[in-house]
Length: 125
Image 1 (spheres, rainbow, N blue to C red):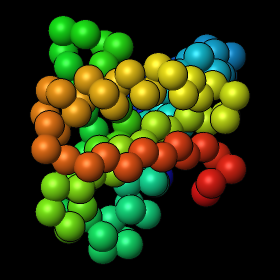
Image 2: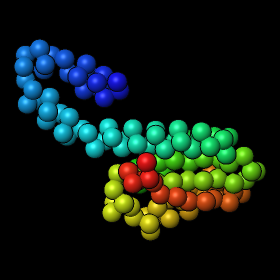
Image 3: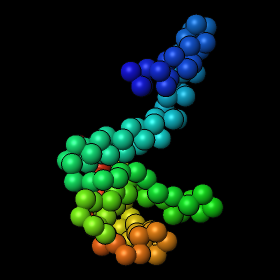
Image 4: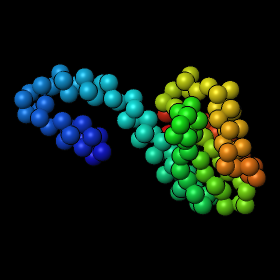
């Protein structure tokens, strides 16, 4: 349903004038971003269903887009967190960059936390 509302309902005028190529181009251009957001939501939901966490969200610094982490959770165990990067393909994961982001997060907001890290891709769904 989300896909339908995001593309077909939002761009109804293209369908009405039979500009299917225009709609196709919009979907083709935007789909990697859209599917990445949906994939992050899916993994957050799966983590929530495990009942091991008291908070699940994302983290980013508005002034520095480099410092963005897809999933940040606070575990039920005091001062323990789990953070993860989500990519559609494993080849796009950059462990060194992710480690630097986690270190920055630790110094910025989770100074007293033990942080476990993970990586999720389509293969993990």
